[in-house]
Picture (cartoon, rainbow, N blue to C red):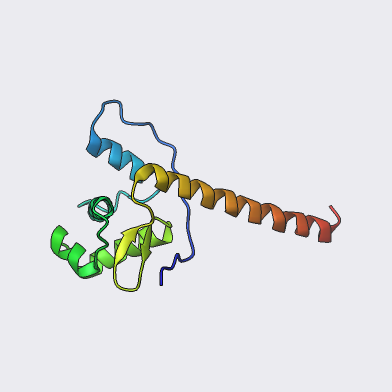
Length: 136
């Protein structure tokens, strides 16, 4: 069973990298989605994200133990970052393994965009109901 849990969508508008550098562009991508923060000094969340991106390309979901081993991180650190990525709707859990929601970054942005649109539609619907009840 695949589950997507509640979702916290964060978008941060920052300048795109000036030069073509895949590492900087991936950092910018993740920062723009609010995935990485300054407290993550060793960039472990970024590393988990990149490892899951590689696994998506190979169509090979990973366990938290496999991620911890590959990245030389504790399982607790991996789980902490996986939970953050799941909360953002970027990663899903199939009961045994973790994987990116989709297998490429463009589709990931498309999915986030759909999530935002659904959330805005829900907000509008509730706002209309509240306005109606308040006589506005």
